[in-house]
Image (tube, rainbow, N blue to C red; front, side, top):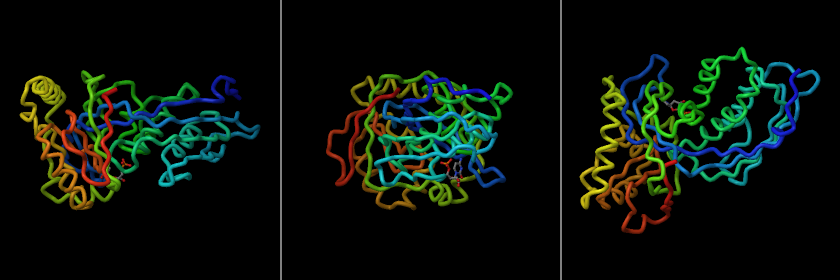
Length: 302
Ligand code: C5P
C-alpha cells in the first residue's frame, strides 16, 4: 500500500474566496438545481487550513470511513462534522482511493460564512487540489470533478488553477478568462448570512425562466468596458452592469439586506451582490461609512 511521504504529513493550504462578477439564472435542471451563468473571480481573502495527516491503517480500504477527521476551528458557526464540506472532501478522496488515514484539520476561518464568497466550498476545494496527487492513477479528472461538484457548486472553480472563469451549468462548466489580478475591491460584510438553499428556493417563476447564455465573449467585453469606465472620472456609468439575478430573492429571504444595497446604490459606484449574498462588493473605495453593524474589508482580485 502507498505510504504518505513525510513531507505531506503536515500541510498548510490556502483556501481563497471568490466573488461573482455578475450572475444570471438561465433555467432549471430536472433535479431542481438551477442553471446559471456567471464570472467567477478569485480574491485575496482566504481561509488557512492546517492538516496533520496520519498514514493509512493496516486494514485501510477504499472507503470514506477508512480514516477519521477531527476539525478544530475557533469560529463557532463552522460545523465540525460531515456538514463541513472540508470534512466531506477528505471522505471523497478516501472513497476515490487516496490512502489518507486520520486527519486533524485546523481551519483559520477568515472568509465570512453564508456570505456568497464561497467560504465552505473554498476549504473543500483547497483540500481536493492539495491532496489530489494521492489519488490512484485510474481515477479520472471527470470522477474527481463530479465528486467536487457534489460538495458545492463553487468547488470546481475554486479547485482549478484559473483566477477568473466564465461558468455555466451549476457553475462547473468553466472557461478561463483574463483576470483582474491585483485590482482592488471592497467587500461589505453584514453581520447576518443568506442561506443559499433558501435564496434559490425564493426565486419566482419569472426569475427562473429559461434564457439563452450570453457567452464568455460577452462577459469579457463587459469586464473590458468596466475597466475603461473605472479609469474615467465618472465610474458611475458602470453602475448596474454587474447584475446579479439572485438579488431580489436574497432581499426576500433577508429583508435586512435592503439597508446594505440602498447604501451601496447611494455610493454611485459599481457594486454587486456576490453569489446568493449576504456580502456585496464595490469596485471603488466607498466614500461613506458602512451601515451600522456592517464591515468594509478592502482586498484585491487574486
Ligand atoms: O452548491 P451549494 O452547496 O452552495 O448549494 C446549496 C443549495 O442551493 C443546493 O442544495 C440547492 O438547493 C441550491 N442551488 C440550486 N442551484 C444551484 C446551486 C445551488 O438550486 N446552481
